[in-house]
Image (tube, rainbow over all chains, first blue to last red; front, top):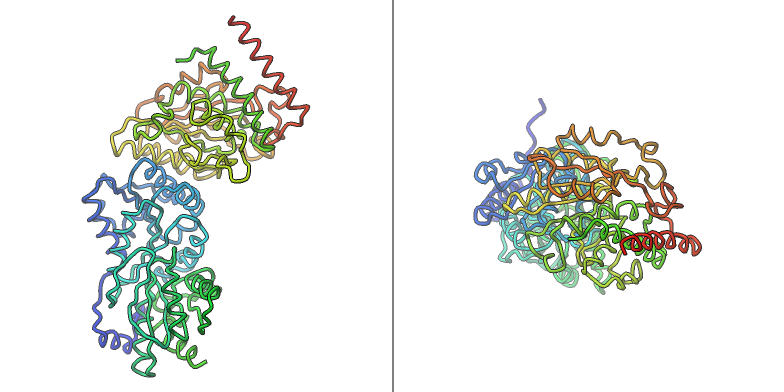
Length: 333
Length: 279
Ligand SMILES: [Mg+2]
């Protein structure tokens, strides 16, 4: 047996979180399942569709409570998305739930044609997204999903960073009459500070600051926040931290405010650096008159290192320490 | 209700229209449109409770044309059903037209956007499950090509439709034995289709896909309670234009001016013969 996975947070990072008064929440997958069950209890048109993924989607309690509102298609992701499109077209409010790696690759053509192009308002829930599956390896990683879906017309991409954002994303998706993709990880997450409400298509300011800005999404936002706090305390650098719960459509006004007001921008994502949040921000800024120093942090275009999610984050400089160091270099460059 | 003779006349007129609009657009899937037109004729004129007035009703029957490339057949029939004026097909495949070369919901009467193969059966399966969830009695139909049966997603859906005992679902294979690069049996043999679907738990009926009486009988009601229905319609690609029949190049061939005159004349002769006989 291998050693237990190292904690996502170093002792110093844990201390920083404590200094910030952050409380530990649940895994976003659990919040997704609980929120969906609440909504489905009130609306019989809500259906969860699974591809032998009820357990990994934390939907076992949902399935027990609402057996008529869950449809199993077996290990058949193309059919999962096609069936979901058909259900949506006859008026059901469908959440298609499957590991992000399969949902956005195996059934990509069904997502593009049957959901997005046909405007069937399905919510696709990519479970255990990014490198959540850790050492299970690249077959189970989804480091392509944001890039792939950014290139598809008529789908909103949501990537919640904590339990609040996930709960609101699920509620918003249930209301939206258009296709949505939600990325859900399975690691317990700190509850983030900040007073900005979750609004689809808007960024949220998690921490204010003027010298530099972290623009991050999903499970990396907490590490950006800890790095910002660490830089404040150790180097006197004031960093803004922006959470991007909606990657498409991207809140270009918030991105441009960072470019205008902060001299350096570092983007962070649990995704390959090709075609993700960082490149989306770069495109917005390059087409403006602002010229901040700019760096994209993510998984590089290489054979991904083996390890837990925490190992992989640390290896590619996406822990508190790694991000603080990269930002310091960017600011002093 | 139309008589068999009236429907036979419609099939000839549809074939004439298909050829005219393909010629006018300079593009189209001639062979497959001619092979499936009798199936669409029976569906829209005898089976489906679909019309421009009922198209937004949640209780309407659903038709998903999975073999989306035979869109000219669908567009001609929808025009005849009154969803739009047939003259609008002048813009088929033209700049800024909503009459794309595959079905889209921008065209009135089209239920789903299709064109990539292997998508219709999963979508139709979802619709049929949805009908069950809401206790609605509508039926769901989908038209597949025989070459299309090589797509694995069809078999995923075939399994699910049988698992859920969807007798409100009927699939029809336009079994014209050809696909773009040759004979289906040589490109990728998928026979025996009837036995395969029976083994997947479907009720199967094989009919002459140009025989309106056989098609009507097979489509009138689910074949068997508790099982999805599969109608294997044996057809001839290019049917009705003798020089096109069973020739692979007419998959998406557009007739030359001379060929067009010959083709239309053959159909006009058949129409004249039919209408004379009835007078
Ligand atoms: Mg064929």
